[in-house]
Image (tube, rainbow, N blue to C red):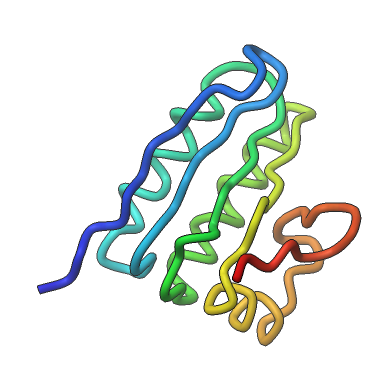
Length: 113
């Protein structure tokens, strides 16, 4: 049985920056939940930070969904930024290269231990 990731958007600064948290296995089985969580966080204007510190697995379907959300957010002039990223997610992001897909913190990946 695949565990459903914890997905809970939380306001950081109202209408300026919103946060979406992804955790567990983030794969093709939960893509709809991932998109819904990011879109809920992105409902108001402002940047969206996706906290991935608790992601144990990330597949390409989920990464594509995150990139698609990033494109929709960018189209309105805001940004989707990957916040703290787990080692497991960082490996996938590094392997596929994220240039043009998502925005990373200015200092690069903030890899969570």
